[in-house]
Image (cartoon, rainbow, N blue to C red):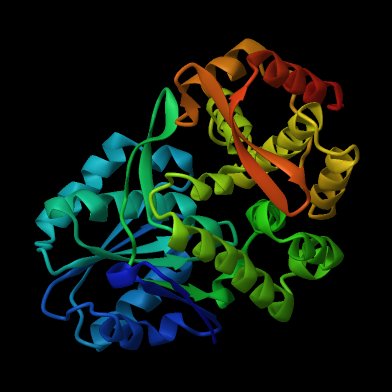
Length: 365
């Protein structure tokens, strides 16, 4: 088992990565302070529930935990205020109290939703992230939890750190190839912003990662989580450095909002966004070749790098204006200076962003 720690003083918590960890969940839950005297609520989705919910319920009940479960539709639409209210109803009817905990069993959507329920139920109770996707190696670490508003993604949220992240890599073996690629987008992102050698490692080991090779996957998840943990430990509430983790997200979130949640997986939209950020970086003075190198790395993981022509540029620009990273009339972007190094630029010209959108469209077939 690989173990990392997110260092946040009294709110520090472990990330446990390994095989067979779901079967050992009760001992980890007890070790990290989840009481057996109060009910646990497992929140999962329709894709994950048939594979892992019954087993986890049985394992916990056999260890004398009281378990309540809720299954939400899969996909981004479950990060809504209506589904959030449904989960609050389940929690109240399940008699969760201030000593209870919520278990997020699933990918990033489930983690964000369950975490936001935990952050707001009785003004905040414990929760545990149990990711079942590669993409969730990013979203399960750092305590950012949220639901969406029709006008903007993740606009309604909180910072609420989990008690632990329990990452059973066996759950990744059932992922469809497209989901694997989408998850690896965020893994590569961590290398692009902070670790040039790791970014190149992702490209060099692309076939092993895409094939879910246990050794490659274990190292990639450990290093990706480790980079995020290092940054979160220094800037928990995104007052500075943590914003670097948003590389590709300004354009990516706009794509998701305009295309509708479903046409693109989150990691696919972020991949296009990272290609756009590299283009923007070259426009703002980064060395030539940054865009080509970034695109090559993304393509090695079978990720999209061009903007669909049917997405309206004005609509995309408007969506970016609603993004949390739009401040005081300026567009805020995470701009790479080179592979492995990025910076926060708070006054990016709107005209430059529009030009990048059009260039991304020109590359589309």
